[in-house]
Length: 368
Image (tube, rainbow, N blue to C red; front, side, top):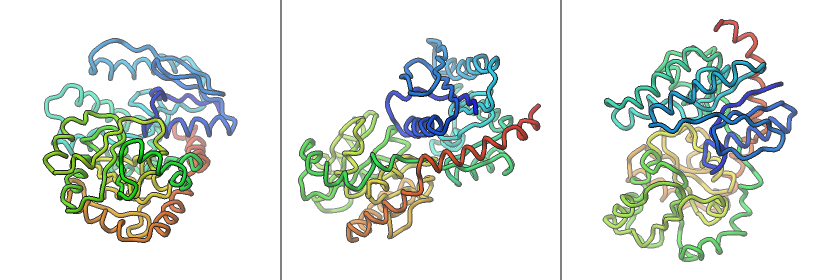
């Protein structure tokens, strides 16, 4: 099948980029003719035909509008069986809603206010959900959110979960990397370590995790923060909470598998999260997860078996959830975590998309 895929570059493998990179590799391995449309910065990928999208040097408002227009021009003349976009564009057969709904995200911040940028993004979103034959969510909660907020009928909505690299993220990393990684950042060998992985500290609830650590009343718990963001307000928060000496700011890391190996638990207390790859990476690494009840990742958490849940913005609940995990035998937790991640392969993700691809010829008829 000849596929056009629109996506941001896979330069730094954050959650969205990692998920797309794994899917692209599986598509190529399965014999699909993949054409990747991306702004400048995309490195060549084996077996993929790359197409560079022009980018204007302009304010964010203009850039948000320019990308859909550039994609429309680029794919219009080509003959593709399926056009699949992972970005907010206007000329696709399938839209992968990997970032959920911008409207729902803004609700966690009190709404868009008068921001022209946010209003433009929501206008693009409305058009995408109204005119795209198939919308693919990465979790059931995202599918339900799109149906509720935009009235998209269930016949056009599908759920395809992300895959995870089960070799890169493996329980054996604990033996390989635990001691060395802790020594690298000065974390004591005997410390009980909570790991936070993610960019976008505000949305992912880092504030509440730090407050939870400050309310635990003992000195053996440490927090390692891996990800891109401005740590300054969170450093001040850690100082006020009396835990600054037990918080490590590791920055963005390409070797994130080492950091899972150093952790005893991973916390993802997001205020809004369609389904962070961190959930699957941690579980595949054999590390239990504290997830937010509003996150798509909560769908793979079995409380008391492979992790725990906490309400968004609730430091006390996060602290209780961490205590629940700390009080359980590690071998049992680790085994259950790994087992719960094993169904989420790239092959399973590919099979999900191929089912959607087969629907596209008939689905297009409704939009002509």
